[in-house]
Amino acid sequence: MIKYLGRIIDKDGIKADTSHFPSQTEYQRPTTIKKFQPLIGMINWFRNYVPDLSHDLHDIKEKLKTKVVTIKWKEDEKAAVIKIFNQITNQTIIHHIESGKPFTLQTDASDYGISAIFYQKKNLLVYIVRSLALQKRITQLWKKNA
Image 1 (cartoon, rainbow, N blue to C red):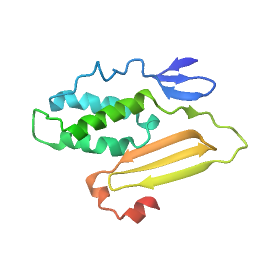
Image 2 (cartoon, helix red, strand yellow):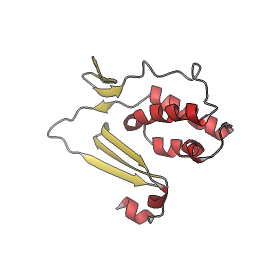
Image 3 (tube, one colour):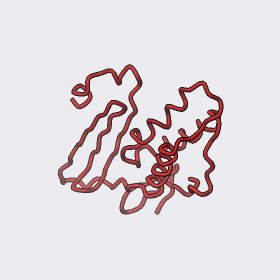
């Protein structure tokens, strides 16, 4: 096992090193926008290891667009943060490519984000996810899936 640039690489594949990631019990929910931004940055670092992160993060990121200085958390937003923390601590391993075996590419889109999964058999090779800016959300759904 090798730890390199925040990742753990071993014979099975690659995963993010969560040793510096706070547990839910250690982490205090931010109450201001200034304290909230590092949370989003930290979660975004794990983007390639957590399926559906854009979807789960969408409502929470909307808080950054408000002019309010003090943040009040709704129950569904608290639940979304707990879900994201659980997904990060129980992340999927990104496996090494096995040459000579077939690949599969699966794509998906919603009004808020797009994603692609590249895998061999049931082994995840790459997970790509991206949130869409407001102007790109206006694009028709069939264009996103194309």
